[in-house]
Amino acid sequence: MELVSTITTSTFTTHLLQFGIQAISRVGSNCNHLFFQRKKSIFLTNLQKNFGFVVKSFASRNYAKKSTKKGGESHRNRIKESSRISPDEYSEKTDKSSSNEDLNADSNEVLLNDDLNAKKSISSTSRGDVLQACTVTSGLILALGLVIRQVSHIAFTEGLPVVDCSTEVSFKFEAWHLEVIIGLVIVISSCRYLLLQTWTDFRESSEAANQQVLSSLQPVDYIIVAFLPGVSEELLFRGALLPLFGLYWNSALVAAAVFGALHLGSGRKYSFAIWATFVGLAYGYATIVTSSIIVPITSHALNNLIGGILWRSMSTTSEKR
Image (tube, rainbow, N blue to C red; front, side, top):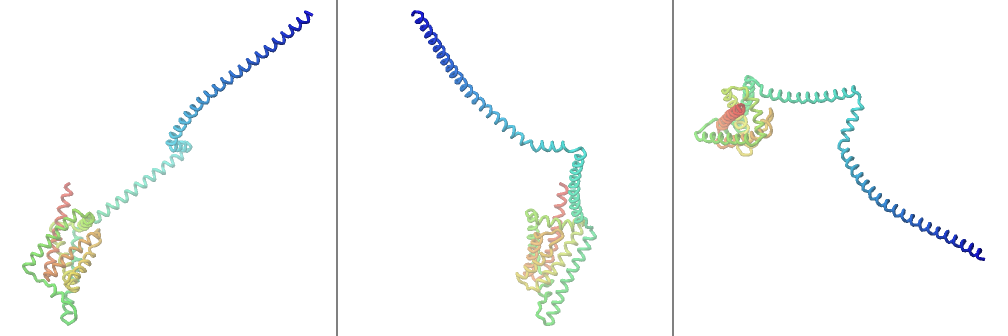
């Protein structure tokens, strides 16, 4: 009986010990599981933080590299392209570029030479050619003016309704006409000087005309080229056309406009034509007031002479500088 109870007790004790051991092992495994789960979550959290920082820093470095690479991308592409080109192709392209540069340089040189040649052709007119052209042109204009005056006189004497230009604007001269001449010379010469200083287009036009006509002349020749046009032009425009149109302001303006239009060309621009129109209107006013052709002829010739002397002095001063 005691043996049975002892066996039973020992058996119970054995089962109890086994149950305790199993419980302890389960608790231990649960603890280990919880411990490793905590470690794992801490590790993952730290890894995520560190990895996120690494990703951000890597992205910023990558963006900086891309922005830096974009600046030299075209240069590297050219280097890569040139590295793929054979030496013969590279020399051929170099020769083509150099030939294009030489062609551009040659074309620029040709244009420059053409410009210089054009300027030389303007200023290279000989003294004899200038005097001959001035004499022939002035002679033709003078002849036309004299013909108109003579024809109008004949028509008037024959009873035709035509104004006699020779009597409307005669060659008479009175003492007070000298005051008109002096006033015209002062006003026109002063206006010309002011315009040369302030109006670039007019200065260039005057320079082109004077360079073509006066550059090859001697100082004594200025008297010829000043008085021949003064006499012939005034005899035609103020001594023939103006009295035919009538000695009125509108007639003086029409004759002055025709006079100004004929001063275009040979390097002279519209500014010079405007100036010639103004001068022609002034001469027309003097003709209407005095009824004398001597007044506009003398004023015109003196203004031409003063203008030539002024240009000569200004050209000499600029050459010395």
